Image (tube, rainbow, N blue to C red; front, side):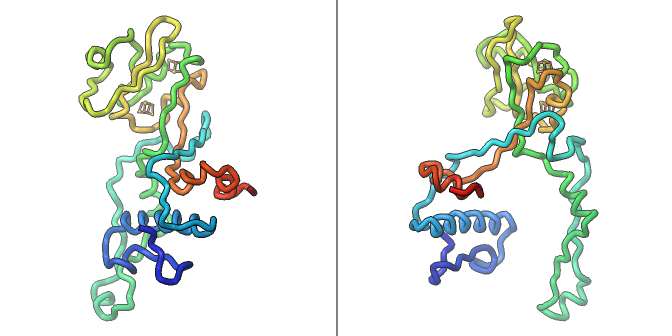
Amino acid sequence: MTFQSTVPNVFFGGDSAFGPKNIITAVAHGHEAAVSIAQLLAGENPRNRPPPTTNLMSQKMGIHEWSYDNDTSLDVRYKVPWAKAEMALASIRVEVELGFDAATAFKEAQRCLNCDVETVFNQSTCIECDACVDICPTDCITFTGNGEEPDLRTRLKAPALNLAQALYVSGELKTGRVMVKDEDVCLHCGLCAERCPTGAWDMQKYLFNTAMAESAKRPGRARAVQGVPA
Ligand code: SF4
Ligand code: SF4
């Protein structure tokens, strides 16, 4: 869907267009509308959609440049405060959800699992010191001899039980071993990258950017979308 209204330069979605649904649906509508607006501004038909999952933009984060705190939070979800029932029921104009104050919003944000930040392994700089194995809180990194995946699964530091999730296996290292990582239990905490003395582990952030998938075919426009003069 383009989320374009009958007035071509007006787009709308979420609750205002389709009635109450959850915030994720509204955000998805906003994202799709943004794709449509990018198409319109480029003089193209908003109905021409970029293929989904075709473009990921990598943002290298580097050692000690995390954009997040890697201390794992055990806090449960914070409740959004509501207006008192007698006030909310007295008038339809009263906002029921009051939103977080700044301090609570910060604590809620700290619960983020950082699933958009991935561990990336560079085998050429790994000196096989095993420091990352030692520090990983979920034991998801193993250095071992190579083999077929079913065989590798029997030799990991912690059992990799989700067969639907492929193992992350490096090329052969200097001692003949390989690095094997079970992505299924990685917390994205970044401790492996922080501990690694050679920077062989890095945390890289990925932005899913459907609007740029189509733009990638037109170099001039891709630069404009990124905020770089075309
Ligand atoms: S990011 Fe954390 S959980 Fe994932 S491999 Fe590194 S140390 Fe282990
Ligand atoms: S800490 Fe770094 S150098 Fe040491 S084994 Fe892990 S990836 Fe290799």
